[in-house]
Amino acid sequence: MKNYKKTPAQKAVELMNAAESIFYEEKYILSIEYYSQAIPQINSPSNLAYALYMRGCAYHETGNAIEAAKDWKEAQRFGFELPIEIA
Image (tube, rainbow, N blue to C red):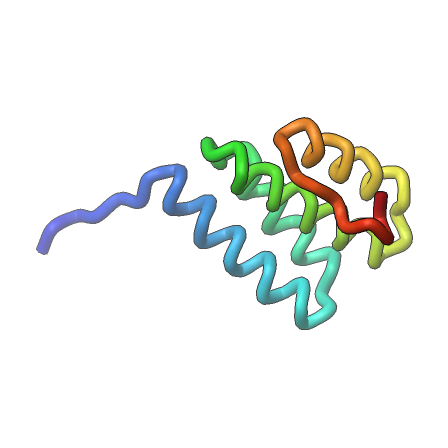
């Protein structure tokens, strides 16, 4: 059997998928943890922007407006357009 190692990008995608699924289960703190693990491994600007946006949404849901705003601002730096109700 071949020893298959996942690349950082593959791990990041798995973490992002898990984080998003958990977010929609309203497990926001756990979602933040997964996004926080994924973000350093993401090498695509669009995926990075999306992960920052979603982590910002999770922070927002926990009542942490300061961290949410930081993530949303960083997401915008990577070209993410925030929905009107957030901007």
